[in-house]
Amino acid sequence: MVTAASPRTPYRAVLAVPEAKLLIGAMAPVRLGYAMAGLAMVLLIRDRTGSFSLAGLGLGLFSFAAAVLGPLRGHLVDTLGQTKPLSFYLPVFCCSFGLLPLARAPWLLMTLCTISGAMSPPLLASSRALWRPIVGADLLRPAYAVDAVSMQVSAVLGPAAAAALVAVAGGPAAIWCVTALVAIGGALFVAIPASRRWRGDPAAGGFRGAVGAPGVRTLIGVAACTGTALGAITLALTGIAQEAGSTVGAGLLIAALAFGSAIGGGWAGARTIRRGPAVSMATGLGVLATCLLIATLASASTPLAIMLIVGGLGLGPANVYLLELIDRSAPLGSQVAAFAAVVAVEGGFVGLGSLLAGRAADAGGAHAGLVVAGGAEFLAAAILLMRRRSLSGRAAADVR
Image 1: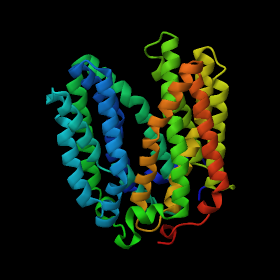
Image 2 (image 1 turned 180 degrees about the vertical axis):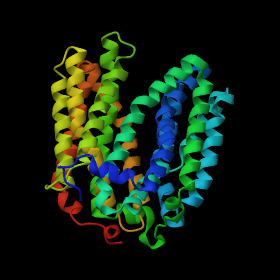
Image 3 (image 1 turned 60 degrees about the vertical axis):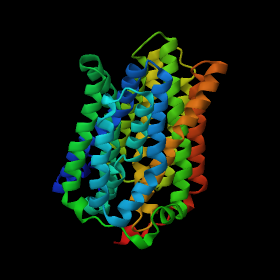
Image 4 (image 1 turned 30 degrees about the horizontal axis):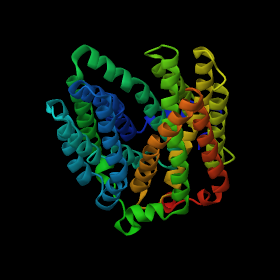
């Protein structure tokens, strides 16, 4: 493991591995496409139907189907390897998503959204399972840092790119751009030799085997809290921007959090930790929670953005350590199912966070949603600390 004395060395070592560069290059368009998809769907359905309620329903159906069936897709990858399941899901998703601009009837739009979510290829979970065989255990943390930072960059650029495409070329162009990005990146990913070599273990029990591991169950509980916080943050920052009369303010505030997270994730990936990833992740979540609660006192956008950047410095390392903990906790042969299960639970609780933040905002203003988010992050940190013994043992994957 590379020490913190040479912060650039681990990233250079990761990028020196040829298949690591292939993986990063293949996943870049996929991440951007996924980050664009939500806003692109909302704007297209709103234009087609004239209803924000139907637009929200379409996005909800897409997200719900993706979350509920995510572990099943991960199980198929663990059972059959990556090539066959991805070669099926990828074209089906691209066809159903790409047909959205051709649909006019609300029922058909909702149906295509549901099919697209259900058939969303498990590229993110599959790509994370490749880091260990590609770079080895010693470079796993900086590799996960690259993964986490890439997600944050995409989260900032994706919605902006979708909005710009809709403004310049219309809603269909944004949908077809998402389709092309996922298709190109997915095809490149399937062609990576490491992906074609990767094999799970049918005897590992798939989804049941993954969630049967005590450490994975702990992380699923943590994901429920962090998903709740994510939904609350998104709603709260949108409400704060609207109260200030700004149409782009929410995007800028979310970008501030993502900017801090990218810096924090890059820092975490280049250092050696002595307290272990579970305690370090809890510390990062505690920093984020504290900053969110302090941010409720900010009446101007500048101090609020500053607190979000500082909070992101805790969120970034937490994201890196989460990936490491999933890898360590998942039974051998169930890594993709474990990644998919944690992501599915986090995504599924975003709606709960939005609901709680909305009620809090109705009672005390938009800033009250940040209290919900901060409380959820503190609860996630508490679960990690109380259940850290379940995360202390390394999974069988570490002795391959």
